[in-house]
Amino acid sequence: MTYRIRGAVALLAGLGACSAALAQSNVTVYGLLDTGIERVTNVDAAGNSATRMPSLTGSFPSRIGFRGNEDLGGGLSLVFTLEAGLALDSGTMGQGNRLFGRQASVGLKGDFGTVTLGRQVNMTYIASLKYDVMGPNLFAIGSIDPYLPNARSDNAIGYIGNFNNVVVGATYSFGRDTSSAGGPAATGCAGEVAGNSKACRQATGLLGYETPEFGVNTSYDIMYGNTGAAGGLTSSNNSDKRVTANAYVKVGEGKIAGGVIDRTTNAATGRTESDLYFLGVSYPLNPFTTLDTQVARKDVKNSDADVTMLVARLTYYLSKRTAVYGGVGRMKNSGLSAVALDAGGTVGAGKTQNGVMAGIRHTF
Image 1 (cartoon, helix red, strand yellow):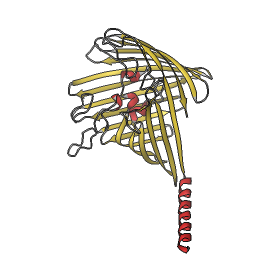
Image 2: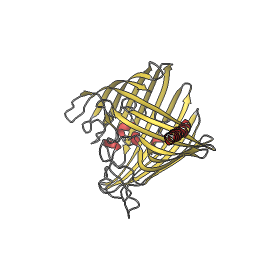
Image 3: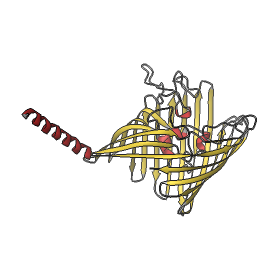
Image 4: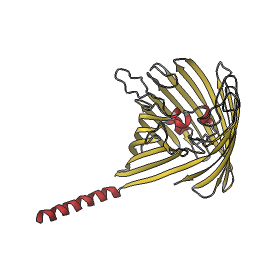
């Protein structure tokens, strides 16, 4: 009996120690549910139209996540993020059917900034957050360059810091993408190959200055390929490079923001250069309604396969967490260009595509 009592006391003491340790941690469960209906024209060479519920995004991609931190003392904290993408039209996982495809990272945060390890958004993604007024909307610049709203890196070391409004950041990936299923978010370049230090490596960097009234930044992103990788990067000598420059300024209650993305791809099929320009305005018409508009143009060098996009979105907030929205858009393809207006959609080569959309969004 004495041994049982001692064992019970030891167990309770251990549980008390665990409770004390857990009390120092803070974990938040959060999410976003967003879906709608769209109608777009010229989805094929025959010029047919389609009405459907999109899979990739509405005004924002749906997700559920867990974010936590633990105070380690001395101004140092452990931080982690686990975030899963969801397709509300079918209930499936996003980002190539990964469990935590949007983010899966752990790291340390202090006065020096934040260092993270794992799958994480990189500096190309972060560079656009305050400068692209449409964000990952169904009709937006992510339709022209699908990498932009999917700029994440597997097997990555990341850093970001803010020092008196100066923002600096970088990531380095030993193997940028381990998945080969699921569209632009999965390109099959696992890397970490013995004897090949360039295979599937990726480096990104960010430098900016941001205040509530205005901000500017620039980012650099280069990724290398390897056997079996998508996008024509089938060798570690192949690369895809993006350099961005962005700016925003507050005008009254509104914001004007834009930028340029210079891209150079050295693929197995040859070298391609392009510039993507975008300019947007976000303006609150009243405390419950916001209008966002954006124009963009992609200029492909030495080619007539250029693209011009014009989109607008009106959002009405039913509460702080729930909103309904509607949008319109137009994507004009020149030459043999076939860029769809809607993210993940299709369009007949050289055709102009028009679209309308409406949806509902809730955050928790």
